[in-house]
Image (cartoon, rainbow, N blue to C red; front, side, top):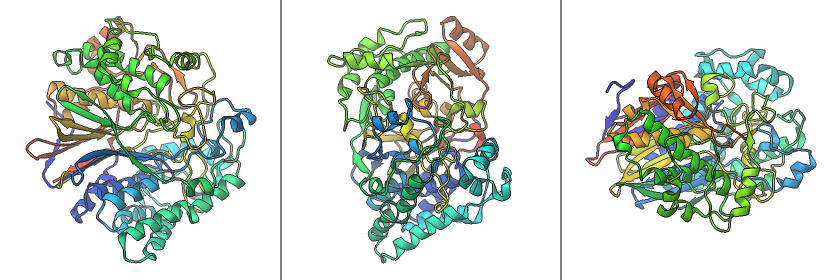
Length: 600
């Protein structure tokens, strides 16, 4: 099969990410003797520089990884929770019923930096300077700005000029929109990371002490102080049409740490798939696999209407359960064992027929009836409520790939090294659209709190110290008991869906990674969006029109509310694989012409 790029093959190591400079920086860490964890962190810091409309230093990060040393799969949770002052009453007292998708009220504790320092401390090899130098260099000396970043800034230039001048100071140098493909610098962000590095190295030559000192500079030092002061003294405009100060404090930052936890997992034929828990949407992927396990997908063509229909209908059911049951298990009871069980999947599978469902149908779990009813009553249907008007709100997702220059998606990284370590990480948040730049730091805070509900009694209802239900969802998969795949994609609520199409084509149709990524992709927005203004589009199905007119017509006949998308506009998948013979493979999507895989 023709592919847009070769599937990368090697034995030393492979890195794949959503930007070629990040991939190259990660590969450089492997060449220096670093491992997959060093490479992943270095790539992530570079992505903050080159894709600032998709991820920033003050964002969040989950990673799923396999350690060749421990021979275990673990989740590193660097998703920061809500601040101590972030209560439902606090927002209601401000006259707010839906947390805005931008501004300081939408901020949770920034977890990504702590996550990377934790990963490097516990699993990396290289000195912190080696890992940070590529990002610092691109911040200080400049990097070629993506045309999409330039377009994003152009769409926000009035906001940055009139309402968020600290963002304008960074992203409108000399009052002008920076041009695509020309060098762009952020010297203030460079200075922030250089100061962190200087304070780390002042702790002495011990690598562990340096990493702890860097961590402390962020969460207990000058970075925390700047964030605290900005939230207390500034009141920027947000998507409510009003100005609000933030709730995040230095005490919130000092009192939080990232942590490791066991992944959620299911078996699927000869595979075992590992995801983050129900504080994110990872179990949606697992539930969908269990529902699909009873269908003969191998007999359906990988881009056939039968394949697309069955996968989409299974996803609708799993996402309906996300709305009814998923939340931070430290705060709410989530019946995950039931949701991932064979018996439950069998009952859900029986709901799938030859026609598209227009209903949002959570399953029934004893003891949760009132919660499910409340979740259904809370659903907002698109077209029945006022739409968001701010260019900054929500998580930048697919809409920008097709129609809006003011949004993008997030970023993703996969690495496998020569020792067999595997990392899949999906950093996000803190993009330049989220809130004004903190002038002392050179970057803004995140807007992940918009994933919370301001109604009591829902699994994702806001509470201090609670993790928002993130959409970030990297994946590790074993085949016949052996670590095989690391993969993921940006894309908000679409992340599970695009990954699922690729994985199923790899499993059932024998396609290599690049073939599976290149085939036309699809997704549904049938269920409520995680992001402001949280609306659902029952029956919706987007499919890349390159599947062909006959396939599109068949899907319409089945009752799908079809939204054809131009070819090469859906999904930003990357993937890495360790074959049974030890050969390493990697692939990256050609869509948007940014992602790249490398290896040798």
